[in-house]
Structure formats: C-alpha cells, structure tokens
Image (cartoon, rainbow over the protein chains, first blue to last red):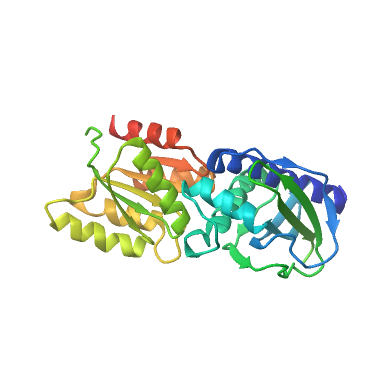
Length: 169
Length: 131
C-alpha cells in the first residue's frame, strides 16, 4: 500500500473519534468538510491542542515506523462555546478554567482513535497534549510530514482538525 | 452498600476540565459530597487521612493516566490497605485497550469507564458497583 493510501487510512479513525467525542461530551454533531493539504505553519484557529504520536505500522509482516501529530484548532468564539457546553458553564474569555479543555478533547480523540488504529496494525505511543493560544500562532509539525487540514462545521461554530503523518525513521 | 446522596466521593484527574465534568455529572446524578484531587499522589494521603477520620471516602473515581501517581498505582495502594480492600473504585481512561482492562481487574478495580462518556453511562456504572 502506498504512503498516501496509508495516510488516508490513518486519518479516518481520528475523524470518527472526533465525532464521537463531540456528540458525547460537547453535545454537538460535527460536519467534516473537504480535506485539503496545508502548506504553512500558521494555525487557522486562535486556540490549538497539539498531540504527538509515534509507533509502528505493521502490514504483511513488515513493521514500518511512523510519526504523526493531531492538531485541533478553534477560533476563540467556537472555543468558548465548546468549553461552555462541555463544562456546563458560560465562558466568554480565555482563562485558566478553560485552558485545558482543548487538551482533554484531543486526549479523548487520540485515545478513541488509538483503539481503531491498533486494529489496523498501528501500534502507538501518545504524548501529553499541549495547548497554544493566540491569533495566528505557529504550529511546529514534525520534519518531513504532510499536513492534511479538515475544516469542520458545528452548531458551536467552525473548527479545524489537522493530521500530519510520515513513515520512516 | 446502597447509593446515598451524601456519599463521600473523591474525584481524581490531573486535568481540571475532566474533574469539573465528572463533578457536574455526579451532581446531576444526585451526589452532593464530592471532593477533588489533581493526581494519585495527592489523593492517596487524602484517602489515608480520611480513613482516620469519622468520615472516610466511600467511593473513588480516578483517571488512569496521571503524571505523578497513576490511577492503577493508587488502586494498588488502596487494595493493599486492609480497611480499603472493598472501597468502591471506578477507573476512567481515554484508552479502551483490553490489556488495560485485564490489568485493572486483576488489581481489584470495581468498574471501568472509557472516555468519552455521558452522565447516563456514569450512573449505570455506579449502579452496577453499588447494587
């Protein structure tokens, strides 16, 4: 299977997991839009949760190392609405109370996706999610990775899921 | 053991967001006496101190992955203590790997819940533990 096909196969569990997490914990349905290749390091949102992942993909008895990253970015307004729904409170500004909401969402998505990835032959070691906040912040993707950007619409507003992936050491 | 609204519950998670969500859900279910801890290492002395008091904890809800002391190590400490061998302990995890479930069951977990989960699922798990 080609690297591109592996990437497409690798991305699907994250979208399924994101839909599940948002429906269960944020009480909203996600509508993923057409994916596109991202060509710069600038975040589309104001708040981003970033989680690195590495491991081995085993296909037909051959194990290939891979590196990947999951990024979820929200414009401030969306982030406040998502945080308000999840924490059953009202938030209109970024503060300590909602600083780790994105990280927890990212964690749950990765945990859910990992289960499906294991079934597809991917072993995976999750890092701890980190948060970046501020308009037009930069995201440092692992060297040599291609980044796919998936715009998402929801009742709470737009958001963006980014998945990057590369095979080899 | 039966469910009572003033049951003393300790919620342990290193993420403040998750502690708040679990606390909200427990409140929705009807519980009123909920304390929080941000790691297994801060929870363990709280559990030990409460054991010496007239009001020991009656139910532990703990995350699995925490930086200082994991939920699994906390569970092992609890089960290694004679007076706490039967303390109801619900483990919460982001990963639903079969291996983890087996490890937690062997260590004496009362039940297991995988994120994401709703208040209805949490209630169901609690009822299974106490009924």
